[in-house]
Image (cartoon, rainbow, N blue to C red; front, side):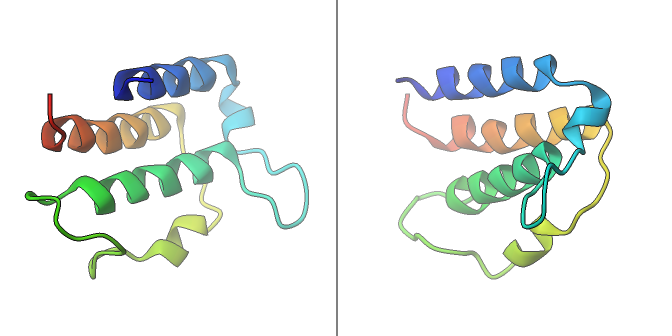
Length: 95
């Protein structure tokens, strides 16, 4: 599967969810879709932000735990986080 397919699948999934649904938490110890998107975006930024891609693991600037704070995001912000993470992947991956 190409990287662009992963991005497109995520975009289509986000479009299917209502604005309210993006921030809904369905039970204890669960995260909203918006929070999961924030975490995935943070992971993509951390893993692909620097060239050459010779290091793995968390970057010192990333505060992974804060990515799971329940913050309400509007649709624009969710889509911006998703696109931003993937932008770094595409910019720093081999063609």
